[in-house]
Length: 138
Ligand SMILES: [Zn+2]
Image (cartoon, rainbow, N blue to C red):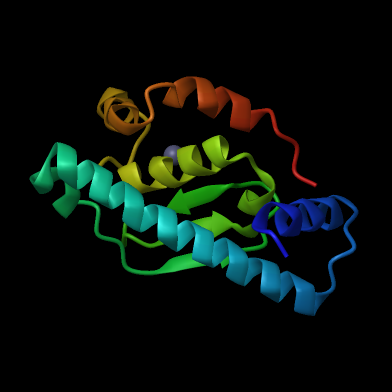
């Protein structure tokens, strides 16, 4: 099945709240594959800009969870956490969330240095942040 049709079906089922546990686990794995792929890609993009900067972007564990209120988080122990519903977002918003958490590995706050870092790769990062905040969780 083509990827975009697969994701469209999943998005619909998540909306309809009709995922059973086995399906949820499959979705979680799809989300994990996607998140890992993009994390590696964006660390590479930061490394192209500044190899020293990319040294700060080393994470320990990446968890994919079923969460009610958050798209992602980063802990002081450098563990990243993403909501499996990231699959339901547009590629642009998914990438923004992934870069957001990646940048917290270096700047664990939402100050100017954090946004400067995000916007080196996602120039409209703050606009996308506003967009993502208005998406309701299903
Ligand atoms: Zn944040």
